[in-house]
Image 1 (cartoon, rainbow, N blue to C red):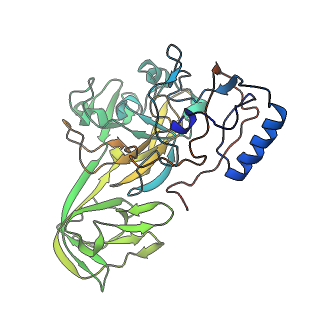
Image 2: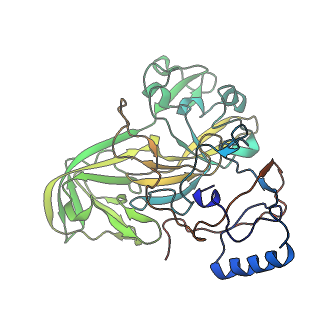
Image 3: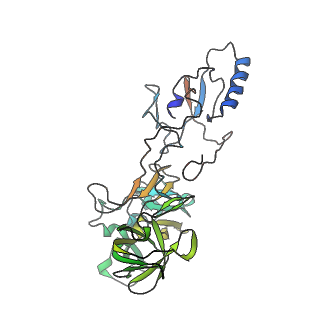
Length: 376
C-alpha cells in the first residue's frame, strides 16, 4: 500500500468487497462515483475486505492488527519502487539463497530442508528446472574457508578415484567454483575491434566480462539498450591469442562490438561463476544438481520470483564488497527516493479494513508492467 491509499476519498466511500484496488483514469473514476452516488447516496461508509499481499510468504507482514495501521508505512508505488535505471535487467530468477554452494549441490532435498531450505522449504516439484543465485558469497559459519563453501563435488567415495586431499563429507573428488579473475588491459584498436590485455588465460568465449578504470572505447561507461537498461557487462566473442580478445555487440549477437583507438589503464573482470545464475535439477532419488546457466557481470540485476526472504526482491551485481567483507555479492537494489506516481491525486482511502485470506485465485485480475523503466 502507498500513501495515496491512506488519505480520505473525498467524493465517495468504498461500497463493495475488493480483491485488488486498481488505479483508474480520472474519467472512469468520475463515472464510478456518479454510479455509486446514485445507488448509495444514503450510505455514509462501508467496511471492505481485501486479500493480503503475500510478502516473504507471511500473511501478516505489513498490517499491524494492534495499531490497525500499515507497518512500516510505505511511500512509493510499484512504478517508482526501485532506482534501477542505471542497471541492466536480466529478468527473473526463481530463487536466491544464503546457503553455501556446497550445501545445495549434490545434496538431498531432505538435507537442504534440514538447513532451512533454499529460501524456505522445498520439494522436487518446486525446484526441478528452477534457477538460483547465491545471495551470500562468504563468511559461512560451517566452513573453515570461503573456498570450502564453493566445492563442486564430482565423485563420491564409491564412484570415483580416491583423492584424500579433496575429501569431504560423503565425497572425495571436487573442484572449486571459480570466483572471478581480473586482468590489466592497455589498448583498444578500431581496425580489429580487439582489446589488448596482459593475458587471456582463463577467458572463454561467451563468458561475461566488465571493465573499470580508464574508459577505453566507452567500455567502462557502457552502452544503452532500450529494453534492458545500461549495459556495462559484455560477453567475450573470441579469444584470439595470448593477449587479445573481442567483445560481442549486444545489439547484434555474433558480431564484434565496434571499438575505437584508445590507450590507458583499464581492468577487466571475468569468470565469476559464484555470481552466476544456476539451473537446478533433481534426480529420481531426490539429489540436487546445479549447472551454470548464465554468467553475470557488473551492474546487472535480477528479480527473484519465489521464496520467503527474497520473493519479489531486485538484486544487482555490485562493483565493490559490502562493508566488512572481501567479495562482491548480490546487493538489494536501492529503493527510489523520487516522488511517487499518483494517478488519482491522492483521493483513494481504505476504510475499516476487515482482514481475510483466500488462497484461491478466483476473481484475481492481472496487470502487465514493463520489465524496466516507465514508458511515458
